[in-house]
Image (cartoon, rainbow, N blue to C red):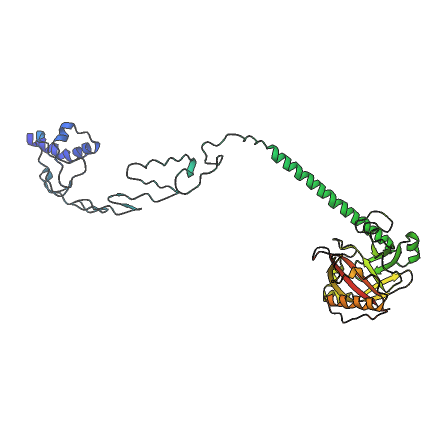
Length: 392
């Protein structure tokens, strides 16, 4: 009877024992009888219960070795890296080895690692959100999407300092002044152009032009250019038409005028005109410093109240206004009257020596000469001059 009970107990012991071990329900007294040895499961081992007359669990080939309950059990088949004697090392996977997990691979800038129990504490550096780790990332500015302390609602407007307000006011004033100046100049350009277009309708009626203004001296024109204007003359005066138009009104561009100290009946007429940025007056004159342009515009038409004339360009040069006490440098603007042969030849030789284009033309004494002069910006007080001789 006892043997039957024992056999009955032993027949249930395998399942019963395994369940109790897994559920960890053994009492402290039972635990004291455990003799862990061999390659038994961690923290628990199957032992014989002396008080119940159980056989001693044979040490040897693991939990499923031979000799348990008097019957020979077959070896547990090797599966997933286990053998019948002991577990093999678990094959490395995802950077872990059998001695412990390797440092957790860096991801999203974290330097912490998993040690099998829990992550190490995150470094405390006073930053917020995802970038709060010492991983080389800069902290996001307050108010970004991952800022834990981002403000709620609209930010309060910053107060603008007095200095910034003053600078803005000055900038606005300067902008308005500049716009006013530009607008005024554009208006004057338009008015001057309109006035000259009206005068061009009388460009062949010199008596009518003279009747309208007694300072009218002649008309200067270069084909296929904007140069198509009256020429004024006031004896001993070179200022009147600097900023005065044909009708005597204020004008940015003024009018073309002949040097007031030239002899109106002499061999040389020195004519001045503004170098306007919109190309009007003598603004296009520096284009002659180009061989192709020169070849296409060699002839200048200059008619006066007394005669008509066509002039051929023979010299093109750059110059400047020199010191009044400099008597060694050629100053073309001082050569107003070329009525004597010596003065005439001196002027022709010097302007040809300065010419940037070799025209191959040399005027002879007695041929009338005109010199067109305008300001130029290649140097301080620079000038650009085109000289031509009368051919018919």
